[in-house]
Length: 361
Ligand code: UDP
Image (cartoon, rainbow, N blue to C red; front, top):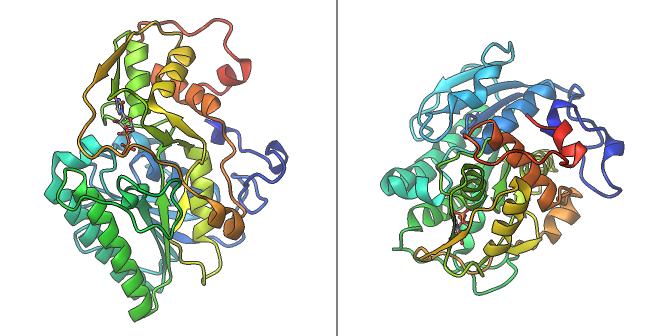
């Protein structure tokens, strides 16, 4: 991972995002007390790492439903880190002041969130209420991890924040889509009615190390299948598109949004506007893993959006943010991570890109 050796401003191409000109390891100008719900999950655990590296105190709340102790194990002995094992939908009691709350707690992959749909919708709605009440009580700023799923199977392409979406309220994805939409509603009502300082990020497909192998997501599935020498399962004909944002870029966007002026509430799209068909992902993964796995076409799941790509003009204008990591480099980093997680049927390419080899593990 790039964050093992903190990136300096000069490492970024001109005009690309950095943390307000500071490298990730530099101490923050003022140390904050930060709550991260879902802090043991994929995005959450990277955010905990980053907050600690920036000198903040981190209170991670997670139920380990889909998050993993492994993701935060190295942090457990850190003096500025604490872990609260609880469901975000239950009342949150934390002594002392809180400056920032990132609400990331929710199963996020279709396989996981459809596993217990009632729990998913309640996690979205009751979890939002709990963090908003906490923010109100503590005078904290609170960021909601919303999702591109609020646009459903979109009739407008690419998707700007002003598009109201095309969501099937009774379909298998509704527990997540409608739950997240309702969470946005609660955020804006708490903002208007009680003056809570809110930030709403609509997160598009994000990938990178620490994705869960069996969560059914396309990049983790394809990499795991390719490394194991199994067929790569492409749903439908693979022409449906997604736009994938590497985890490092997403973290930068989230932190920039959180630290933006209080008049900036969002909802703001955060994602990579580079749109690719799923079939092309399969090819990229085959190349990155040196795999000869064949492609196995499977039925397209119900309500699977045909196209998805964010308009990120607002994030560019308001946060001076845009993704910097190209898909092939991000996939290479993710493959390096998965090589350590799954039994590999294919060896790493001897002549792999030296930069990628250097960042392995
Ligand atoms: N997909 C696929 N094979 C897989 C897993 C997913 O073809 O093994 C497809 C899926 O149907 C969807 C896209 O990849 O069109 C992205 O799926 P994912 O579950 O990663 O995210 P989401 O649908 O929530 O964007």
